[in-house]
Image (cartoon, rainbow, N blue to C red; front, side, top):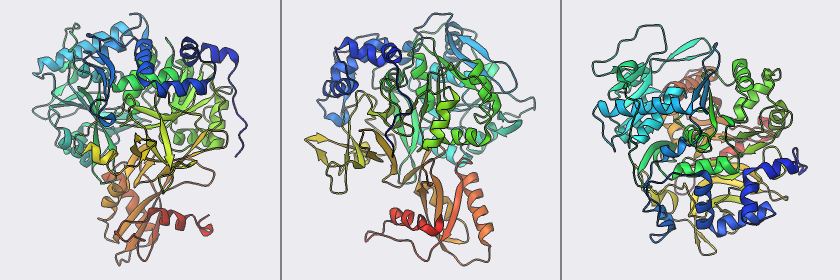
Length: 609
């Protein structure tokens, strides 16, 4: 591929960047030297970062990093006391904390003072309902002002938040509630989008959820269960609340990420995880005071909490559009809200390019884009850059269990579409081939410790999932992640998909086993294997299903539709089956493991186009 940059930073952009300020402070002229220092001196780097971000501590740490129990169990901010929510309210009272817009209405601004008052009313409402620090609450809502405030309020009150994406169906909601057992769930009656009203509360009821606090957004009447409560009746009138101070390792959020065993991994975030979010936002997305950060997402995916912390801790505004990000209304919102950093998943950009519905808007306020969730297509990323008069795209790849990215880009380096220019500051990884030798293309292994890395799972053995059986590299313990990368001739990186049985569909990580467990209930399928296939030219993965037939008279067209409907109904409407391929038998290893790489090779034969 060409290594000619599509965007070059000017001297002015470099010198005004957050990275440059840190480099200059420590006496570095070259970014590469600064990154190397950040991983060779992790304690010093992270201590300086905590100071730069203004993380508020009720009691100072005795050590920024303690690895006396092994790098697998690293302790950050040892012996400190804090609540990370206090670090989200460091701007001026009158500064805009959130700008939001409902479909068909005008944007509205919420000051830091008013957001804090709402957060405190919700925190008091939780206490008045009889909840205590340590009790979990769940959120099953779109990304709205209220959802963000509920999220911050619960953490401020010392109550871990279980976040569930609003696209999930009742059985997937039920699985997550069973794992975490929250005392209370927040939801809306419906989700309003593109003139439609999609049920949310009814899904909560079908999932047999606990007591619900229901925010009504529709004019239609709704019948609550006996134990449920209306949002207006829940909200306290008391706008003062004393923050519950906790230990750094106390859980603030439980997020879910698909593993390879079928059950979602319940990944706890602690008070230190948001420091990784804010650090990446500060250095890599270059978020600065009073800027406006927009990233269409949901609290159920890590980019929802990431957005909250990366924006607010950096004293920037969160921009929330309540409609579809593919609509013209979204494009006008980005223009009117004067968004400075716009995050995307590649599928959204593909829609914009096909529809050409964003070209009429003035996006010149944007300083950079950022893309995550799935592999991107260079031509689509070049198109995105042009929508804001040639601005860089910070490619960003990480994971829920990392709290941010491990490979990314910067605004101080040339920007090449669909490539990563650097390993994330303060973190390091190595690429190994099948013989565990360092390679320019191979499986990625993280080198702990890194601020933000998980140290426990609620429903799995953390060591077994991430460390058991991993090789060592130059004496370092390695942590598996499951991604495959390639380092290019110019030192940049390109994503090559997954090496395990997980895949990213529409920006959502899901395991093959989860998909197959649904598909195998269909009468015409004896057994199946779901794979992610990269389209020619690159871009978001396509979901292809190979299956062994259980004799049936159903036509191929009907079979594909049944497969699509079952995934949509049982798992997530965002997971779309592209193709259904009949095969005599699934290729397996001697240990009976499906050879998915072989299936990808079969599908990519010339006759498949």
